[in-house]
Length: 543
Image (cartoon, rainbow, N blue to C red):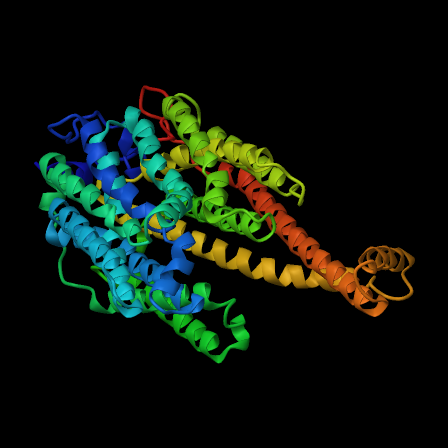
């Protein structure tokens, strides 16, 4: 009897449903090599792929200048990657069953590596965008495959440690990406941002071929027919949604006919996709997995974490470069300490998961993340580097307490056969949350700054004694070098520049406070998780 069939029979026994499958005696499949070698094999490629979601951000001005493109056109270098990545993510489970997971993993690494070399060799913007589309398509499956392999390769009592390793790649890579990208661009060329993937990809291909195995229940599964309708609706809906998020602020959102039409397409396609997949006998993405309470709660919370993680990563470099005058490399280095906090906390949490109720770890993590984000809301224009570094370290520590138990609790109550499909949905929602976070923070930053500017400018009148006094002081100082009228105009320009900077600063503060409040809402929401106990053993809710 196969493992898959055995697990299916167990689910028919009273009291032995999918949520209690972890209590079964550990007669499950295990890899023939040390699972940590398997972890290193899959995480090498995953870290490389996640790094590329943010490593090109700081190089966009160099790319646009080198390829004779505008800054707006250069943003398609990011958009094209995210669109193709998002389309492949939820389809990973079906594609893995169709081609075989190990073969599909190696093929994805080959495509990603070859596309990286093509990106570096691009001679035009169109060629670079095409290469980025291929790169995103190859890299989209690496995250859910790595997550599935790790969960299946480790016994339940060590899955927390496995998720800590996975979390290092997912959380740390986007943080060090801007710093690494800025350093490579400043010291070498933007092309080496992509060329550096080639030797890493070659090593990942060798390790995946040597150490990764397909479990018996993966080999026994049959993919069935291709769900052309479901895949088409999903691709259309996700591509349209990504376009809205990336171009919304640039096109003034729903004041633009293009954004309005795209929004209608996205809504119709995504609603049609959900209806079709729920009614299909062989869906390309099995949405019924969301009936699992723990997984549904986990998807909700990881989406919020994506908003906070990517939103804050987008805000901080912008604050440091536009208001503080930091160069690209220095602004990236100010954010990077978050990675050190993540590494420290994930080492600790990897040992706590399985011993401490995962819900309390998650609640603690969101509370600390709210505190660290609130610390960033206290920034001003006279801060030192340490005022940015310490909140980032605290934030990194908080994310370790969130990511590891959240992933293991969301996936831990699912049978192994559903992990691959669930992992694709889980990672898709994290990335979608990140896209929403970046778009929301960018939009609110611009519009809140306008609101604050209007409020402050209302006091810049001839009837405000404080403003008049300040104007005369500045004009008097400038009058030593010019005439009275010219000095007054220069004084007004100086005051207006201060108003712009203060308005933008207040807008940054508003955004950080909003992110902190969002984190606080997640603290009580964590109690929606259902705690699962191992039969005759300690709680394994975090597994």
